[in-house]
Amino acid sequence: DIIVTKEKNVVNACRELKEKFFFVGGSSGMVYEGYKQYLRKNSHKLLGKKVVMIFADRGDRYIDTLYSNDWLKIIDERK
Image (cartoon, rainbow, N blue to C red; front, side, top):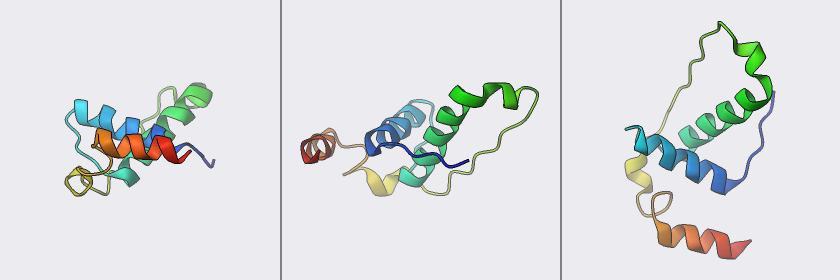
């Protein structure tokens, strides 16, 4: 399956993971957001299964972007 989402959803996913003590970058945020979207539509397919997500980047490189409220305002204004 292919999952398409908005940039703001990925940013929110990163921030949600940070609250759960996973400080991740945008690629990892997309993995998590894609999982959540897939789960909403296909939870019946995952019953009794294990899911592995690989978070390949860290959030320390994105403090001035993904984790910046000022940057989020700029993104919102672009659209």
